[in-house]
Structure formats: structure tokens, C-alpha cells
Length: 333
Ligand code: ATP
Ligand code: LTN
Image 1 (cartoon, helix red, strand yellow):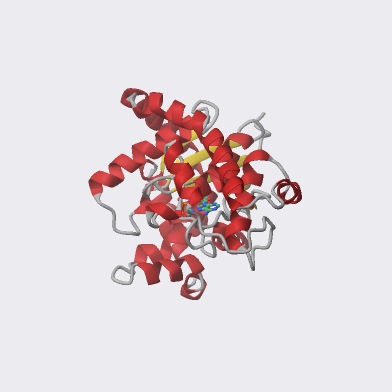
Image 2: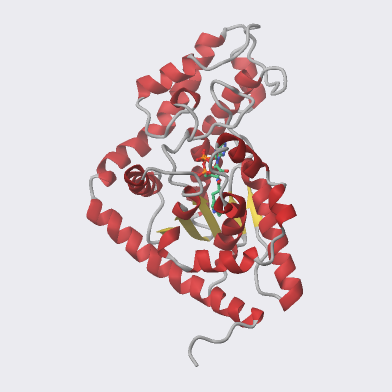
């Protein structure tokens, strides 16, 4: 009997995965693999809402897959696949577009941010991005979605779309819940700590999962703090220090109070080095696994092939049900 609840989450293969992606999402993927049936996708169709260089994108896709596996995700217990390999994602997204209002999408803060950042390419895909994300989740009847807090608004929209569809046509979709880390749900930029750490920002603002130890230490030493030299958690007045404290807490499990007590009167140099030690220790095993895995192209290809097959079998069922409910003519006449 299949009594386990289901999880779906996705990461875009845009650039280098960051410490934010790790703490906010990837680390939880591994934590949840025992308790749930999990699908983890490299959402390449989302990535092309921003203009990508094809050769770079192709590389980033494989690199992201290797990082998923290097972080310890077992490709037999979890379904790991590329979004574009399962055509039902785009098909369901089209149908759900017809149940989503322009007004709802206009309110999405990620759309507003990305429109500002890419003012020369505000395309329809960028606008409809959250509908494709809803399709990803609803296609697999996922109960839970591990994400960082920047995706909360998108998840809320996915829930609204599911409820709207269910109300119109009777129960069709599971209405999903979000799963957010207690500390580190929003890791901030090292240079502008009031903004989210993002893999599409300049190099010195983020720590990449694959950054070597000396680079990690250098980036953290240069991280923006403030000038009162007190390690205290106060995101409003001390965003830089508070961000580093959250990173340390998320990686070591130490509470924010106990971190403040440990570094009281010690100055930022020692504190930043301790954060660097924790980050380096957390990422080292992933980096070692990555070295081995990324060289084995045949293995990576076999994982993506079997992931796509397994995901397709599930996706097909939901899409068929949706076609029927909406009133589309059955394909096998
Ligand atoms: P981009 O900068 O290309 O938009 P991104 O760094 O925001 O990308 P995504 O692929 O969009 O990364 O996100 C993958 C997952 O990582 C999502 O669940 C997202 O919430 C989480 N995440 C991204 N950045 C952070 C962050 N700074 N802190 C915590 N979680 C994050
Ligand atoms: N929109 C997300 C990535 C994403 C996702 C998903 C996350 C696409 N589809 C489904 C969870 C579930 C982002 O920008 N971080």
C-alpha cells in the first residue's frame, strides 16, 4: 500500500547553486527522503524565462543534477528528473493558465523584481512562471513542497489555483503545503544583506556550493557587516551580522542566543572565521562527491532517463484526469 505522502520541489539550472539554495531547499530534500515519496526536478523550462546562453545552460543542467546526487539524494528512492523531459508539465501549465487571472500574476513580487532586472525581456513566460510552478506541483498531487521563503507567494498561488479547479470540477488536485527551514529560509546576499542571496547576482554576493575553501573564507571575510562590532541578532538594524548568525545556526544547529554569547566581545574577524569553518565543513562532503559524479556522464544520463520515465508515468495520470474534467475529447477514440 502506498501510504507515504508525496513531495515535489524544483531548482532552476541557472548559474551556480548557492548556500541559499542548499540551506533553503536542497538540504531539506535529503532530510525528507525517508518519510515521503519525493520528486525533485531540475526546472529547466523555468530557467529560459530569463535569456540563457545555450551552451552554458546545457552545462548548468548537468552540474545541477550532479549536485543533487552529490548532496546525497538517492536516485532510486527519489525521482530525480529534468522538467523538460516530461511534456505534461508544459501541457498542464497551459490548461492552468486558463484558470489564473492576470491580476493575480501581476501581484507576484518575483515577477516585479525580475521585470526590473531584465527590463528588455519581460516575456509572457516570465509572467506565467508561477503557473508552470503550480503545474509542476499539482501534476504529482504533492502534499508538501520544501522551498525557501521567497517562494511562499508562488506556493500560495498554486494552492489557490488547485482550490479553484477543485471547486469548479470536483476534487482533482491535492492542495499542497509549504515546508520551510526554521532558520535560513531566506539567506541574504553577502554584499547587500537586505536582499536575498541569489545565484544570478554577482559572484561576491553569494557562496556557491562548489566554491573552494579559500574562496569561501575570502567571501565571508569581505561580507558586509556594520561598525559596532557586536555579534547580536537584529535583522533590522544589523542585517549583515544577523545573516551570518543564521547561516552558522542553520549549519551547526547552535541557537542564535548561544552564538551571541559565544562571540560576545570577540569582534567580527573571529566570528566570520567560525562561520567560514562551518560552511566549509558542510560543503566539503558534497564537493568530494561532486568530483566523482560529474566525471561519470553515463551514470548521470542513466539517472535522468529513469527519472523521466518514472515521473512521466505519474504525470500522465493527472493530466488525463484533468482533460476529462475540463471536457477535452479523449485521445483514443
Ligand atoms: P535565480 O537567482 O536564478 O532566480 P535562485 O537562487 O533564487 O535563482 P531557484 O532555483 O529559483 O534559485 O531556487 C531554488 C530553491 O532555493 C527554492 O526553493 C528557493 O526558495 C531556494 N532559495 C533560493 N535562494 C534562497 C535563499 N537566498 N535563501 C533560502 N532559500 C533560497
Ligand atoms: N520557482 C522556484 C523553482 C521551482 C519550484 C517548482 C519550487 C519551479 N517549480 C516547484 C518548488 C516546486 C524558484 O524560483 N525558486
